[in-house]
Image (cartoon, rainbow, N blue to C red; front, side, top):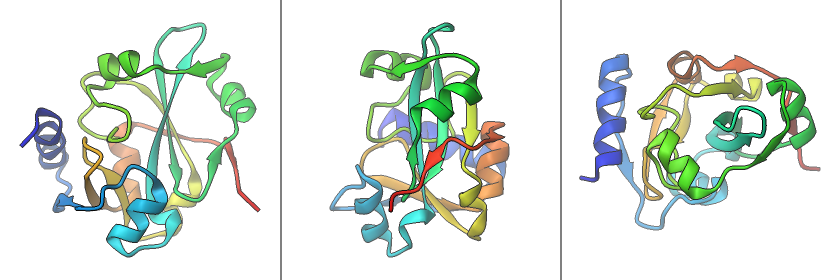
Length: 159
């Protein structure tokens, strides 16, 4: 078991989130792949989208429903600073995860986080478990509490 996967499992246990981490043989790099693999609606995938705060220099997490896209302008306004692309090195340094497997729990340090209220429409959502092949189901309220995420309007709904 990878260090990242162990860290997510420990965090879930520590948070009292009773769930099972599943390995998906086809991978879960995209929300579409993950929804197909677990057999759920696209919006039940809780995507961890990471930006770099241009003023702070730190990562900012946007937890969004799988079918939605983060609108950079809205996200910047919500974060109170311009946002840029977070490179793989910064993401790994501040979250402990590689791109494609960033979990909303088990981060190596606290990061500022915002959530898409669309996630609350479901009893269960699925999130990355620290690798591109592992996911776990959880109540969205539990993920939001775990990340201390603040609700925000930062998405664009594809038409």
